[in-house]
Length: 101
Image (tube, rainbow, N blue to C red; front, side):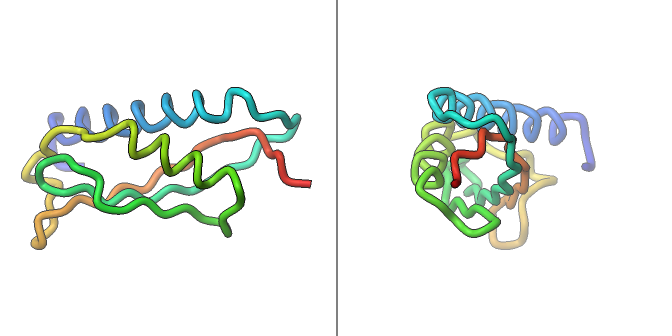
């Protein structure tokens, strides 16, 4: 990361995404925790353009996608984080209860 403002912006986005995702899965049951990778493409104005998950999706991913979208918009990313096409790509890992059987 190139600057303190860039770090702060990323920490804010990740915190908001984690917070809304935890609200979605708060009612999920499961004693095991699984890690879900999330990739978010964000426009120069802070709007969410795309959300993808890995490993392969399951029924909870629709609710998680809605949670990520609800966390935005995030405000303008610092110029240092913008790609030539004017977007920012973020990857993070969420810990959620494993409801798969």
